[in-house]
Image 1 (spheres, one colour):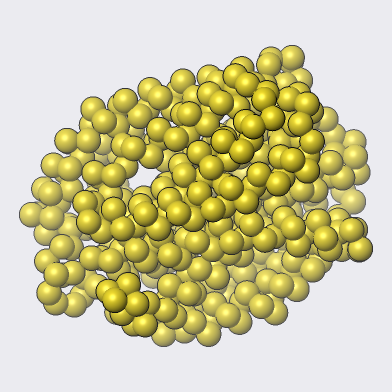
Image 2 (spheres, rainbow, N blue to C red):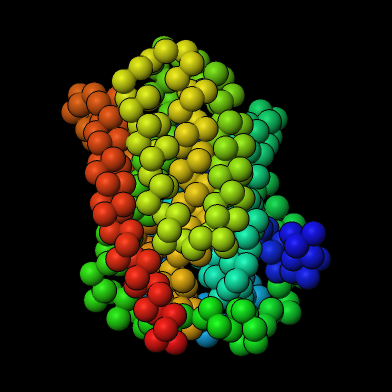
Length: 410
């Protein structure tokens, strides 16, 4: 009954953030990589060449996001969306029409900045600022847009490209953004929700002190926590960017590997919702250390075995990590550092996350070109994940104390 009451009162805002997260798909690696084979053939690029180009575009988008992302602190959601979504549509048009590598780079830069970066940044920042006592639930429900997009857009793209080609599919993407996505977000978000911290009762009492971005960057606890949030996007992007090569190495079929994606989506969805409930009950800092455990297991499985069952175990494990990360990345930062400067703080976080997704494909692409075993690379990622998990359990008490001290200071 509490959940139904929450949805009745907040459906429009949670729904608007859901739609924004859904349309991040066009800037996500899993979607762009569906055209990777055609792009490499069209522009005569090797795995390493395309990985380097992708890395450069993503790095530039991360640098831009660190500054541009602050716009959400002084502009309304609708004002920012009216800038970002048309530019995202323009990026898909450039991808469809380009025959020059410079325009390909521009398209990738804009897709990563306005798709993966800004769309999710706007949505999650709004949920973190507008909700407090029910923040975990709001973030997890709105973040389901990522999973729905991940489950639906690859199938749509493959089906549409079978009729009109991969370039035509990117034009369809532009039409969907402008005709469906933009009007839906504007209609749902045109009236902003009163922030919970401005109200009375439980929410107001739970509001932490508002840290500035400079204070956060000088906080020694910020950096190890940030490193934990970089692991899922780094590893997930790397594996999915080179999924065709991985399938060839392991002797699987692409249809078999693609067919296991629904397990990732289901596990991620469940993990998001469960994490949201746990966050509202125990706090983000209490739940966060457990996030990397399934990701560690996923890396070891995909790194050490080529058995036919491996994708069906790997996918739900990495889905659990991504789902938990999606909720925690929206709820942890306002819990630790307040919401007044949340846009500026999350802009730095998202910029580093985007940076991690740039380094992964580029670095591993060249290691592949240099004949460094790709499964071995994934196994090393699992070892690093395990080390970060141990570090977070060691810091768990200090993080809980920090969140409590921040509440008292407010």
